[in-house]
Length: 74
Image (tube, rainbow, N blue to C red; front, side):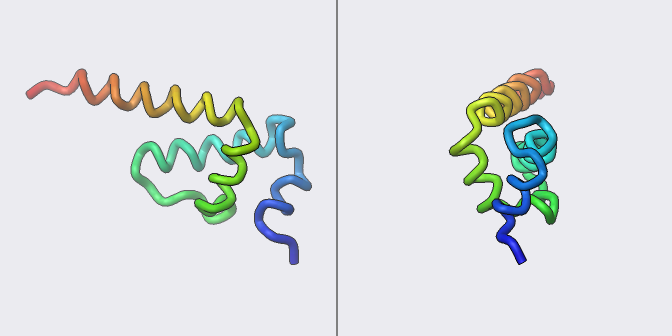
């Protein structure tokens, strides 16, 4: 059996297919939810180290969440 990282790389990492799965996991993390079972935290962290596009996407998602939280009334 392949490790989680190897398995995800084999289906198109950095081509957009896997990045979409990783971005779902980033979104869950930003929202304080559990990651999808196919993208455990360690696999997500490894991908974010290698993929600047997903890192930027995650930073924008976190910033958007912060901005939206600021819109909530008292």
